[in-house]
Length: 77
Image (cartoon, rainbow, N blue to C red; front, side, top):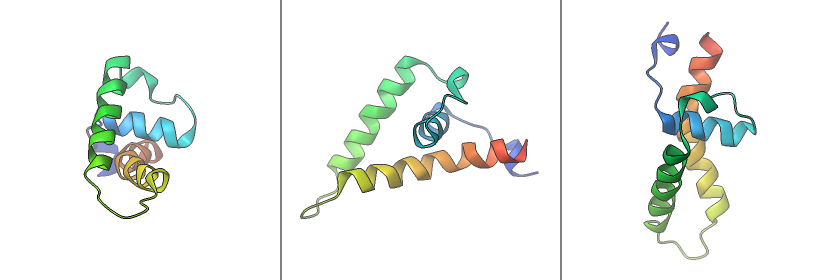
């Protein structure tokens, strides 16, 4: 019941679609939402100061964090 009452935001939907390789939630965000989310992710990754940081791994972890609410909501439907 908790998952089915989640309020999804465009960031959740964009992240889920990217990780899952589909457009299941495409009707819930715009091209402008995607641009803003990409800029946000780039900014968050830029804050991480590690020697030899693995940006692909870190990006995937951030996307997973944002995707989980959408994935849980979808599974509860």
